[in-house]
Image (cartoon, rainbow, N blue to C red):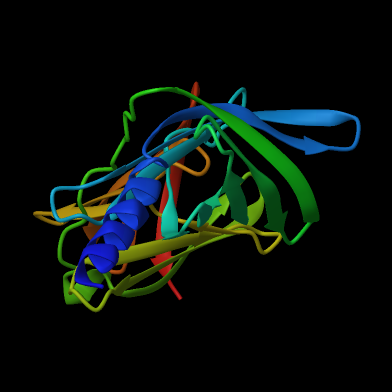
Length: 220
């Protein structure tokens, strides 16, 4: 019985490992496809890590979260820029993952093929959050209010989210604060804000592609 138990454990591990790699495919919605690439692997501690891009969009090298593998089924999420949930099954030859992508907009099928070894693009690590940066901030961007919320996670590291005028929440990939200077990166939209705290204002610049815009966040 012990031999069978070990064999079953090895088989389960092998199936989990078979999701590691670089995958390319598409999310298929009526009359259109969104080309995607996904990289998934295990880190040195054995935890799953991943990054995902929607090609020809601003969602590039977005961190993949909540990766869960059960046999030949995988589930994960990514902000593109709204959160999308993926559930797929691995083909018998371990070369194709197909399934369903779900978001607030609805459900759509997706399919992706293994194309090589994983090259996961991990964002820079966030730093601890100084008390003077914590809270809610507002700025005017293109005539609309852009909100920024900064808070500390359970590990003490800074977490951030941008909220657009139409209510879209864009999580920060990295929030780094050093010597009074904030750098917030949002890979979901290929954007970054760099600014310096002065009294109750964080003044700096938002960069997104070729656009560079001055932003002044004031505490709410």
